[in-house]
Image: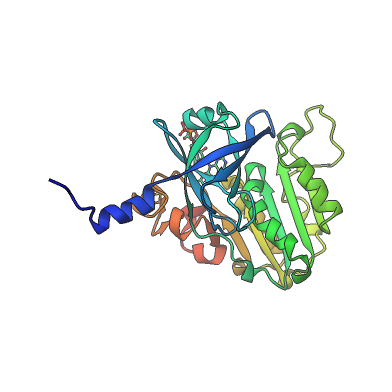
Length: 283
Ligand SMILES: Cc1cc2nc3c(=O)[nH]c(=O)nc-3n(C[C@H](O)[C@H](O)[C@H](O)COP(=O)(O)OP(=O)(O)OC[C@H]3O[C@@H](n4cnc5c(N)ncnc54)[C@H](O)[C@@H]3O)c2cc1C
Ligand code: FES
């Protein structure tokens, strides 16, 4: 007997069936972080701060941030840290190999929140990857924003991501880029040492005119938010990009639930004032 696909089959297919992405470029960014440029069958149509679910057939899926800015082409850029089984398998792929890509998912940054403001980005480690998807469109429309500052921190010089991009953002895009490491560990380094919170008290900024976007390890958020608050910024001027373990990516499985919010759908980007009463969000 022939079965007719139900509307639920159709919804499931549209939600969970990945498109095929072909790897067209790979570059080592650090010893454990690898850049992948993927050519998709059709454009993603993503916004800044969104993520995709990336799969390797027979192994599984992982949520990965989209690192390129919104565009109409069929290119996806991402940086993947080798941390476990799946990310190890992705690191073993070569140019020409394929990946499953579904998405884009999540609620990201809205450019309207940033127009006409000074913008402060604070990135810790891998946090620069999703923030790049917001920095890129802001630079494209540079004239519609005031001062743009990026504080980017990582453990040591060898762990810094997007080095060339940090240079061009400084020289060509009129951005004030503050590059920090926790320690140089005897490696050559011409920039600063310290935590990403260190420059905040001395930043030349008008707190009432500034919007901030933060992405980094959970421990970073509390201290950065406190430092910005001391400078006079309110919680509704601060956006945070949160990470949680995820399975479905579309609000069905509950893996990413924090109290009453689903990180995969309500986030991963949140206006910090919307997280009041949910202290576990920053843990
Ligand atoms: C919205 C979102 C965006 C992400 N963007 C990126 C990205 O751009 N680049 C990137 O490299 N990674 C990103 N991650 C993390 C990435 O999804 C995990 O590293 C990946 O799922 C690990 O899979 P694995 O099978 O290699 O490791 P596993 O074997 O699953 O895990 C290895 C170790 O990492 C821990 N771990 C795995 N996932 C997470 C997590 N989400 N939070 C905390 N600890 C975790 C595990 O507990 C375990 O100790 C993102 C996660 C989320 C939720
Ligand atoms: S990952 Fe399944 S509900 Fe968010």
